[in-house]
Amino acid sequence: MTVTALSIAPTVLIRAARGSDGVALGRLAALDSARIPTGELLVAETDGSLVAADPDETATLLLNLVGWTYRHLRRGHGWSAERARDGVLRIALDGAAARPPNTVTEGADSPNGETPWA
Image 1: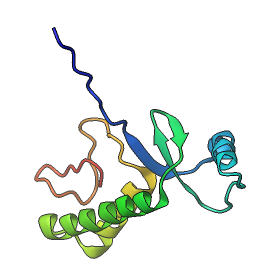
Image 2: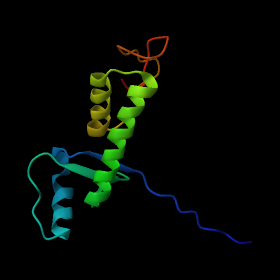
Image 3: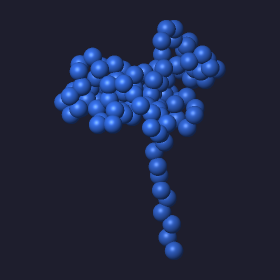
Image 4: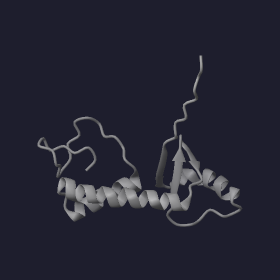
C-alpha cells in the first residue's frame, strides 16, 4: 500500500495589529534585526500565530481583495459606491467573520432583508 502525503496550505489572515500582538511583533522584528514599526500595522496570522509576510504578496492580496470585491458588489449586486466602499474596507480591515443565523441587517439585498455581512 502506498501512502501519499497531503499538503494543505495554512489559512493566512491579514488583519490590523492590536495591543496583544506586542510580544509577537517584537519577535518578528528581531528576526530582521529591526525595531517594531510605529503607527497602524497590518499583520499576517497563520493558525493563531503571527508570521512574517512578504510585503509584495500582502499588497497584491489586498489590492485584489479590495478591487475585485468592490467591482463585484457594484456590478453584480448594484450596491452604491459608498456602500461597496464601506463594505470592502470593513472586510479588509476587520476580516470576514460569520454572523449568527437569522441576523437581520439594514439595507440588505435579499428579499427577506438579510445580508451575511453588510
